[in-house]
Length: 268
Length: 268
DNA sequence: TCACTGGCTACAGCATACAAAGTACGTGCC
DNA sequence: GGCACGTACTTTGTATGCTGTAGCCAGTGA
Image (cartoon, rainbow over all chains, first blue to last red; front, side):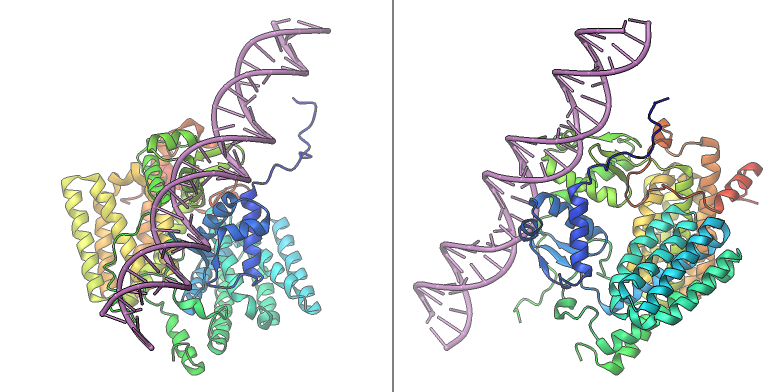
């Protein structure tokens, strides 16, 4: 027995530089400072962040495996430019994963968990009232992450986290539009989970994510390009999680095609 | 406009060393040469593979993001030691993803695709007859990957690929036991897909993956440790995709307890 | 004999140096 | 004037060197 009671007063462990760099670059992408399709030169980033190329390289590899950048051998890293089809597919997968996590959460959540969900909801609606987009996005992310956490399935939770981050990026320009209704749906979701009704929670979540997907499709129909950069189409992802090499389009992409046809496709 | 019509006859690009190293290490893990929980020393691996530490580092980072190794800051890389609970959760998620990909595949597969599926099936049953475990595992992987590919959802396909690889690793010791019945189920699946019956394909796939999961649970119930290494329990994954920090057990684990008690329900 | 401290060793993290590949541009030839 | 080739520059890929930290062990004092 140590005389110091493991008080969790431990000093912060040295955060690996690659982590910090990873977060920094991610921020730059999400904030739009680095545009989709842009070539990321290692030396330049290293300079800008005040570190050597090594941690930058490692951060880029990590970003690649998360689907944020595409690594083309001997060419370097490019900010991933999601196509509308890919975004749609991602949203479909997201719906699938989150639906299941809602179902499981209803079966496993604790009292404290329910309280946490309600707290996120409160923060979300507050942000909505204050028209604070940043806080709104954060509350949304927190709520969904909490549901995934309460599912009790760690693998599912991690997958949801990974997918959600990308969804949030694609979805950011749309976020504001889905405000009020989205939080009504959240309320319904929380009640279903609190009641322990897995099927209903799943159904609510399914509808909720589907609404999100449709909202997104409407927007891309008018906006056309996802992130508004002409270079989007070219990048055949070298490998990575998000390569869209051979696969065709999803069922739901038919919807996309329909919608986009009215608004003018990029190629015409 | 280039005079060469981008014929995709391009000469093989120099494969980055990190890729080769990644594959080499992955093989060593899957083959069991590197045991679960083992400390992977960069310099040692570099020496063994005849490269410098740099590409080894990059390969390890990649393996970390795939959940194959755990990277503990200032300690290095350790072969990930999956707990039974985590394996169970992974199998549950896998079932979810594959069920959906089967449903979509039924709606999108082409004639050529159906032929490919039948070809995989033939190879699998041949391997079964010849008692060739390696070929059996390969055919199984190929079949499932093909289904995911035909789903038309690239994001889903990549996620399935990622999850399946790990499943295959955990599942390898069990593979032989599930031979015959598994391929009957595959046949049923292919017919459902060929008939374009998405709901039935989904249901067949759901049952199929569930059977696999149950088979796995039976085995671990007797074997206890997943990879038969005493160090399995200790490793709190530092971060990485597969950290199981806070989450409890999945709902299905309750099934595990039930099933294993009656000793085997695969046939029943 | 036990607890503690100081030093030693091994290793990862980070930086830098060098090599190879790709790209762009300018020059010469047709 | 346009195309093809060659050269110089840019950028990635790989190797190696340096530093700080963690864990271990021996030595010292109670």
